[in-house]
Length: 302
Image (cartoon, rainbow, N blue to C red):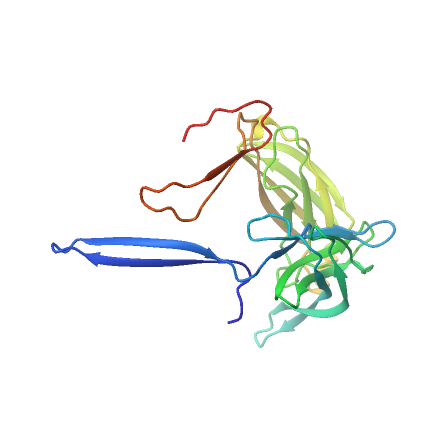
Protein backbone atom coordinates (compact mmCIF):
# COMPACT_ATOMS: atom_id res chain seq x y z
CA UNK A 1 0.00 0.00 0.00
CA UNK A 2 2.91 2.39 0.61
CA UNK A 3 3.02 5.38 2.90
CA UNK A 4 0.04 7.73 3.34
CA UNK A 5 0.01 11.16 1.70
CA UNK A 6 -0.25 12.93 5.06
CA UNK A 7 -0.89 12.20 8.71
CA UNK A 8 -3.38 9.54 9.79
CA UNK A 9 -5.78 9.45 12.72
CA UNK A 10 -5.54 6.32 14.87
CA UNK A 11 -8.70 5.48 16.84
CA UNK A 12 -9.03 2.75 19.44
CA UNK A 13 -12.51 1.83 20.65
CA UNK A 14 -13.61 -0.64 23.29
CA UNK A 15 -17.04 -1.79 24.43
CA UNK A 16 -17.98 -3.61 27.64
CA UNK A 17 -21.38 -4.84 28.76
CA UNK A 18 -22.83 -4.33 32.20
CA UNK A 19 -24.60 -7.09 34.09
CA UNK A 20 -27.91 -5.85 32.76
CA UNK A 21 -26.67 -6.04 29.17
CA UNK A 22 -26.25 -2.31 28.62
CA UNK A 23 -23.12 -1.53 26.59
CA UNK A 24 -20.58 1.11 27.60
CA UNK A 25 -18.23 2.36 24.90
CA UNK A 26 -15.07 4.45 25.13
CA UNK A 27 -12.69 5.57 22.43
CA UNK A 28 -9.48 7.51 22.10
CA UNK A 29 -7.93 9.09 18.99
CA UNK A 30 -4.53 10.49 18.17
CA UNK A 31 -2.90 11.93 15.07
CA UNK A 32 0.10 9.98 13.83
CA UNK A 33 2.64 11.66 11.57
CA UNK A 34 4.71 9.40 9.35
CA UNK A 35 6.84 12.29 8.15
CA UNK A 36 9.05 14.68 10.14
CA UNK A 37 7.82 17.64 8.12
CA UNK A 38 5.66 18.58 5.11
CA UNK A 39 6.31 20.48 1.88
CA UNK A 40 3.92 23.16 0.63
CA UNK A 41 3.87 25.49 -2.37
CA UNK A 42 1.68 28.44 -3.39
CA UNK A 43 0.87 26.93 -6.78
CA UNK A 44 -2.56 27.81 -8.26
CA UNK A 45 -4.34 25.50 -10.69
CA UNK A 46 -3.90 28.12 -13.43
CA UNK A 47 -0.47 29.74 -13.68
CA UNK A 48 -0.11 32.78 -15.93
CA UNK A 49 2.94 32.81 -18.16
CA UNK A 50 5.14 35.83 -17.32
CA UNK A 51 6.04 38.28 -20.04
CA UNK A 52 9.75 37.67 -19.42
CA UNK A 53 11.59 34.99 -17.52
CA UNK A 54 10.28 31.82 -15.91
CA UNK A 55 7.26 31.43 -13.63
CA UNK A 56 8.24 31.35 -9.97
CA UNK A 57 6.44 29.95 -6.92
CA UNK A 58 7.23 30.08 -3.18
CA UNK A 59 7.99 26.76 -1.47
CA UNK A 60 8.10 26.19 2.29
CA UNK A 61 8.77 23.26 4.62
CA UNK A 62 6.72 23.10 7.83
CA UNK A 63 6.71 20.86 10.87
CA UNK A 64 3.61 18.88 11.90
CA UNK A 65 2.67 21.67 14.33
CA UNK A 66 2.51 24.15 11.43
CA UNK A 67 5.68 26.08 12.28
CA UNK A 68 8.44 26.59 9.68
CA UNK A 69 11.14 23.96 9.57
CA UNK A 70 14.53 25.31 10.60
CA UNK A 71 17.57 24.24 8.67
CA UNK A 72 18.51 23.87 5.01
CA UNK A 73 16.86 20.99 3.13
CA UNK A 74 18.04 19.51 -0.15
CA UNK A 75 15.00 18.79 -2.33
CA UNK A 76 14.40 17.67 -5.89
CA UNK A 77 11.75 18.96 -8.30
CA UNK A 78 10.27 17.07 -11.25
CA UNK A 79 7.98 18.64 -13.87
CA UNK A 80 5.92 16.50 -16.22
CA UNK A 81 3.91 17.77 -19.16
CA UNK A 82 0.50 16.14 -19.47
CA UNK A 83 -0.99 15.99 -22.97
CA UNK A 84 -4.52 14.85 -23.77
CA UNK A 85 -4.89 12.54 -26.78
CA UNK A 86 -8.48 12.53 -28.11
CA UNK A 87 -9.63 9.65 -30.33
CA UNK A 88 -12.96 9.49 -32.12
CA UNK A 89 -14.27 5.92 -32.43
CA UNK A 90 -17.28 4.60 -34.33
CA UNK A 91 -18.93 1.49 -32.90
CA UNK A 92 -20.79 -1.28 -34.70
CA UNK A 93 -24.13 0.55 -34.54
CA UNK A 94 -22.69 3.52 -36.46
CA UNK A 95 -22.62 5.96 -33.54
CA UNK A 96 -19.38 7.50 -32.40
CA UNK A 97 -17.85 8.85 -29.22
CA UNK A 98 -14.66 10.52 -28.07
CA UNK A 99 -12.13 8.76 -25.86
CA UNK A 100 -9.51 10.82 -24.03
CA UNK A 101 -6.13 9.55 -22.82
CA UNK A 102 -3.68 11.61 -20.78
CA UNK A 103 0.03 11.08 -21.49
CA UNK A 104 2.68 12.39 -19.07
CA UNK A 105 6.20 13.28 -20.29
CA UNK A 106 9.05 14.41 -18.05
CA UNK A 107 10.34 17.82 -19.17
CA UNK A 108 12.57 18.87 -16.26
CA UNK A 109 14.16 17.44 -13.13
CA UNK A 110 16.58 19.36 -10.93
CA UNK A 111 17.71 19.72 -7.28
CA UNK A 112 17.38 22.84 -5.16
CA UNK A 113 17.90 23.91 -1.55
CA UNK A 114 15.79 25.82 0.94
CA UNK A 115 17.13 28.58 3.14
CA UNK A 116 17.67 28.29 6.89
CA UNK A 117 13.95 28.93 7.48
CA UNK A 118 12.90 26.08 5.18
CA UNK A 119 11.71 28.38 2.36
CA UNK A 120 12.70 28.72 -1.30
CA UNK A 121 11.74 30.73 -4.36
CA UNK A 122 11.44 28.06 -7.06
CA UNK A 123 11.76 28.90 -10.76
CA UNK A 124 9.93 26.53 -13.11
CA UNK A 125 11.89 25.97 -16.35
CA UNK A 126 8.87 25.74 -18.66
CA UNK A 127 7.91 27.97 -21.59
CA UNK A 128 5.16 26.12 -23.50
CA UNK A 129 1.50 26.61 -22.60
CA UNK A 130 0.28 23.19 -21.46
CA UNK A 131 -0.86 21.06 -18.53
CA UNK A 132 1.84 20.12 -16.06
CA UNK A 133 2.40 18.23 -12.82
CA UNK A 134 4.97 19.47 -10.29
CA UNK A 135 6.42 17.01 -7.77
CA UNK A 136 8.81 18.12 -5.00
CA UNK A 137 10.44 15.39 -2.94
CA UNK A 138 12.99 14.79 -0.21
CA UNK A 139 14.55 11.43 -1.01
CA UNK A 140 16.07 11.18 2.46
CA UNK A 141 12.75 11.30 4.34
CA UNK A 142 10.26 10.39 1.54
CA UNK A 143 8.44 13.69 2.12
CA UNK A 144 6.81 14.89 -1.10
CA UNK A 145 4.44 17.43 -2.61
CA UNK A 146 2.56 17.13 -5.90
CA UNK A 147 0.06 19.33 -7.72
CA UNK A 148 -1.34 19.60 -11.24
CA UNK A 149 -1.52 23.00 -12.94
CA UNK A 150 -1.61 24.51 -16.40
CA UNK A 151 0.47 27.32 -17.83
CA UNK A 152 -1.37 29.71 -20.12
CA UNK A 153 -1.22 33.17 -21.66
CA UNK A 154 -3.54 35.26 -23.81
CA UNK A 155 -2.20 33.72 -27.03
CA UNK A 156 -2.88 30.15 -25.93
CA UNK A 157 -5.33 28.38 -28.25
CA UNK A 158 -4.82 24.83 -26.98
CA UNK A 159 -7.92 22.85 -26.03
CA UNK A 160 -7.28 21.04 -22.75
CA UNK A 161 -10.78 19.91 -21.88
CA UNK A 162 -11.05 16.18 -22.69
CA UNK A 163 -13.35 15.68 -25.67
CA UNK A 164 -14.89 12.78 -23.81
CA UNK A 165 -17.01 15.59 -22.29
CA UNK A 166 -17.43 17.75 -25.41
CA UNK A 167 -20.18 19.98 -23.98
CA UNK A 168 -18.70 20.72 -20.54
CA UNK A 169 -17.39 24.12 -19.46
CA UNK A 170 -15.51 24.27 -16.15
CA UNK A 171 -15.78 27.46 -14.07
CA UNK A 172 -13.35 27.85 -11.15
CA UNK A 173 -13.66 30.83 -8.74
CA UNK A 174 -10.47 32.46 -7.44
CA UNK A 175 -11.78 32.50 -3.84
CA UNK A 176 -13.85 30.14 -1.67
CA UNK A 177 -16.19 33.04 -0.79
CA UNK A 178 -16.54 36.78 -1.44
CA UNK A 179 -17.44 39.84 0.60
CA UNK A 180 -19.67 42.61 -0.80
CA UNK A 181 -17.52 44.81 -3.00
CA UNK A 182 -15.13 42.05 -4.06
CA UNK A 183 -14.47 41.41 -7.75
CA UNK A 184 -14.82 37.69 -8.54
CA UNK A 185 -12.54 36.20 -11.17
CA UNK A 186 -13.40 32.89 -12.81
CA UNK A 187 -11.06 30.61 -14.70
CA UNK A 188 -12.95 29.22 -17.69
CA UNK A 189 -11.93 25.99 -19.40
CA UNK A 190 -14.02 25.26 -22.48
CA UNK A 191 -13.67 22.56 -25.17
CA UNK A 192 -13.33 25.32 -27.78
CA UNK A 193 -13.04 29.06 -28.23
CA UNK A 194 -16.10 31.04 -29.27
CA UNK A 195 -18.79 33.41 -28.06
CA UNK A 196 -20.08 33.05 -24.52
CA UNK A 197 -23.37 34.08 -22.91
CA UNK A 198 -22.83 34.66 -19.18
CA UNK A 199 -25.52 35.21 -16.55
CA UNK A 200 -25.40 35.86 -12.80
CA UNK A 201 -28.66 34.86 -11.19
CA UNK A 202 -30.56 34.07 -8.00
CA UNK A 203 -34.33 34.13 -8.00
CA UNK A 204 -33.93 36.44 -10.98
CA UNK A 205 -31.18 37.35 -13.43
CA UNK A 206 -28.81 39.94 -11.89
CA UNK A 207 -26.26 40.37 -14.67
CA UNK A 208 -26.02 39.43 -18.36
CA UNK A 209 -22.92 39.67 -20.53
CA UNK A 210 -21.81 38.46 -23.96
CA UNK A 211 -18.12 37.54 -24.10
CA UNK A 212 -15.72 36.61 -26.86
CA UNK A 213 -13.58 33.75 -25.59
CA UNK A 214 -10.54 33.88 -27.83
CA UNK A 215 -8.82 31.08 -25.91
CA UNK A 216 -10.10 27.73 -24.73
CA UNK A 217 -8.66 28.72 -21.33
CA UNK A 218 -9.70 32.21 -20.25
CA UNK A 219 -10.32 34.41 -17.24
CA UNK A 220 -13.68 36.14 -16.76
CA UNK A 221 -14.05 39.13 -14.43
CA UNK A 222 -17.50 39.62 -12.91
CA UNK A 223 -19.04 42.82 -11.54
CA UNK A 224 -18.44 43.69 -7.89
CA UNK A 225 -20.48 41.58 -5.53
CA UNK A 226 -23.38 43.19 -3.69
CA UNK A 227 -24.95 42.59 -0.29
CA UNK A 228 -28.14 41.42 -2.02
CA UNK A 229 -26.15 38.56 -3.56
CA UNK A 230 -25.75 36.84 -0.18
CA UNK A 231 -25.64 33.99 0.63
CA UNK A 232 -24.83 32.88 -2.92
CA UNK A 233 -25.43 33.44 -6.61
CA UNK A 234 -25.18 31.10 -9.58
CA UNK A 235 -23.00 31.89 -12.58
CA UNK A 236 -23.87 30.13 -15.84
CA UNK A 237 -21.92 30.28 -19.08
CA UNK A 238 -22.91 28.94 -22.50
CA UNK A 239 -20.27 28.91 -25.24
CA UNK A 240 -21.08 28.46 -28.94
CA UNK A 241 -19.02 28.03 -32.09
CA UNK A 242 -19.79 27.53 -35.77
CA UNK A 243 -22.03 24.60 -36.71
CA UNK A 244 -19.22 23.56 -39.04
CA UNK A 245 -17.75 21.86 -35.98
CA UNK A 246 -20.32 19.10 -36.39
CA UNK A 247 -18.49 17.95 -39.50
CA UNK A 248 -15.42 17.34 -37.29
CA UNK A 249 -17.49 15.41 -34.71
CA UNK A 250 -17.27 18.34 -32.29
CA UNK A 251 -20.02 20.03 -30.32
CA UNK A 252 -21.25 23.44 -31.39
CA UNK A 253 -22.39 24.41 -27.88
CA UNK A 254 -21.04 23.82 -24.38
CA UNK A 255 -22.18 25.06 -21.00
CA UNK A 256 -21.18 25.15 -17.34
CA UNK A 257 -22.39 26.47 -14.00
CA UNK A 258 -20.89 27.32 -10.61
CA UNK A 259 -22.19 28.76 -7.31
CA UNK A 260 -20.40 31.75 -5.74
CA UNK A 261 -20.65 32.10 -1.96
CA UNK A 262 -21.17 35.70 -0.83
CA UNK A 263 -20.81 36.48 2.87
CA UNK A 264 -21.85 39.94 4.10
CA UNK A 265 -19.64 41.86 6.49
CA UNK A 266 -19.85 40.30 9.94
CA UNK A 267 -18.78 41.33 13.43
CA UNK A 268 -16.46 38.38 13.87
CA UNK A 269 -12.95 37.69 15.03
CA UNK A 270 -11.02 34.69 13.74
CA UNK A 271 -10.18 32.50 16.73
CA UNK A 272 -7.78 29.56 16.83
CA UNK A 273 -7.56 27.26 19.85
CA UNK A 274 -4.57 24.97 20.29
CA UNK A 275 -4.88 22.40 23.06
CA UNK A 276 -3.28 19.10 24.00
CA UNK A 277 -4.74 16.07 22.27
CA UNK A 278 -5.36 14.11 25.48
CA UNK A 279 -6.56 15.24 28.90
CA UNK A 280 -6.73 13.05 31.98
CA UNK A 281 -9.82 13.12 34.25
CA UNK A 282 -9.58 15.85 36.91
CA UNK A 283 -6.37 17.00 35.28
CA UNK A 284 -5.26 20.31 33.84
CA UNK A 285 -4.47 21.22 30.26
CA UNK A 286 -2.75 24.25 28.78
CA UNK A 287 -4.86 25.94 26.09
CA UNK A 288 -3.54 28.65 23.77
CA UNK A 289 -6.18 30.98 22.27
CA UNK A 290 -5.12 33.15 19.34
CA UNK A 291 -7.42 36.00 18.28
CA UNK A 292 -5.94 37.61 15.18
CA UNK A 293 -6.75 41.04 13.74
CA UNK A 294 -8.07 42.26 17.09
CA UNK A 295 -7.64 46.03 17.36
CA UNK A 296 -8.51 46.02 21.08
CA UNK A 297 -8.73 43.57 23.96
CA UNK A 298 -11.42 40.92 23.55
CA UNK A 299 -13.50 39.20 26.22
CA UNK A 300 -13.97 35.46 25.87
CA UNK A 301 -16.25 32.91 27.56
CA UNK A 302 -15.19 29.30 27.97
